[in-house]
Length: 512
Image (cartoon, rainbow, N blue to C red; front, side, top):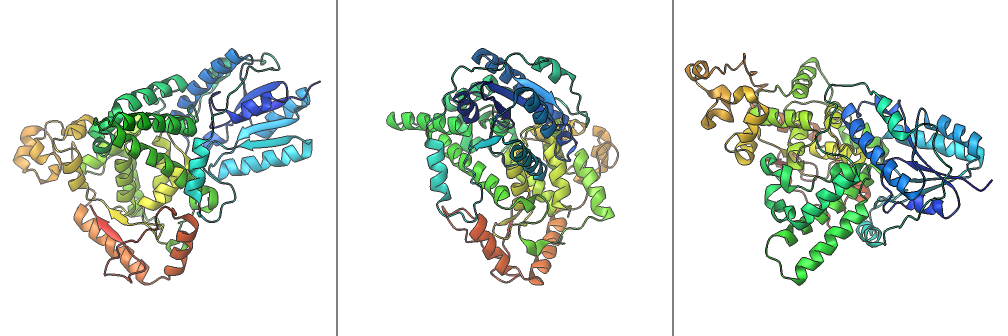
C-alpha cells in the first residue's frame, strides 16, 4: 500500500496557497480531514456563532477538494482518537498541517498529537501560513522576516490522488452538529472563500479609498473596512495572498499617480496586516498571557468583587446606561463584528471605568466575535486594559466618543431603539434630560432605559488614581524592560509619555 498522508485542516480552510496539501500530494494518496472537536466548543471563548461560520467554510472546502479529486473527510471526536482510527485503516505515514498559534487548549491538544505521532512513527510536518516564528525570544529582524514570508510565492496545489469517498458526506455530518451556547448563533457576515474573495476585490477596487477616514466610526466602518478578519482568522484566504493582492494593487496605483485615496488606504491596510502577526507573535512567544498580565507587576491588580460582577453583567447585556457604549456592545453581540477603535474602547471601559478583570471581559467579547483569533484577542485585551507596561494607557471618555463617532445618534438609535425618540441634543447623555421631557417622550431613565452605571468622568478619575497608586507601590521597571526586549516591535521603540503622578519610567496615561 502506498504511503498515505493525512492533511489536517484547522484554521486554514482553503486549497489555495495550501502548503500542507501541496506537500502531501507530492508523496502519494491524500486523506484531507477536518475534525470537529467537541471539547474545544466547550471552552469559554467559543460560541455557536463561530461554529456556524466555520461550518459553512468547511462545506465550501469540501466542494473545492472534491473538484481536485478527493472529498473532505469530516469526523467528530477527540482528534488523537480520530487519527488512531484512520491510522488503523490506512496506516498513515505522514501528517501535514499548518502551524497554529492558538489558546492553551489547542497547544495541549497539539502536544498530544505530537506524542501520538512519535508512538506511531508518523512524520508530522507543520507548515507556515503567517509571519509568526516558533521559539522566538527577541524581535530583532522580525519585521524583515515577516516581509520575506509575505512576498514568497504562493503554493500551487495539484490534482489529488485520494483515498476515496469518506464513509459519510461532509455536509451530512456538519448538519448534525448542534453546539450549545447562547442564542446569537448565526453570524451575519457570509462565510467561505468565495465571499472572502468578493470582499477582497471590492476593497482593493473601491472601498479602500475611504478606509483611513472611515475606519474609526461604527457608522462608516462596516463598509469601508475590509471585513476580511474572519477569512484571515479561519484561513479561507491566506494572509500571503491578501498582502500580495493589496501590494500589487498599490503598485499599480502608484504607477498611475492615483488621487482617489485608494493608495493611502491600501498603505494603511497593509501596515495592519503586519500588526496582525505582531500581536499573534506575543501569544506564541509567551502563552501565559492568555491567563496572566503580560507585565507581571500587575498580578493581583484586578480582582473581581460583587460590585464588579454586577458591572460585568450589565456590560454583557449592553445595559450600562451609556448609550454609545451600549450601542457598541449590542452591535457586537448581535452581528459578531465591530470596528477596531470601538473594540478597544469597550475593552478599556471594562478595565478602567468598570474595574472588571480583563480575563472576564476577554471571554465575553471572544464569544461575540465571529473573527476570534486567540493571539490577537488576548494580546489586545491586555494592551487596551493597560497591562503591558509598554503602551500608552488610553482611558476613553464615552460621552466624547459618542459625540465624535456618532454625532447625530444614528448608531445609537439603531442598536438602542428604546432611545429612538430622544432628540439629538440629549441622545449622548439622556440621563440629563428634564423629567418633564422624559415623560413626554416616553423615555424614563431607570425604567425604559437603565440609570448610568456611574459618572464616566468620576469613574475615569478613580481609575487613574487606582492605577497610579498601584504603580507607585510596586516594582515595575525591570519587568517593563523585559517586555520591551521580548515583545516590542523593532520598527520603532516606544517612548511613552508618563504622567507626573508616578515615576517617569512607570506610567503613561491618555484621556480621549
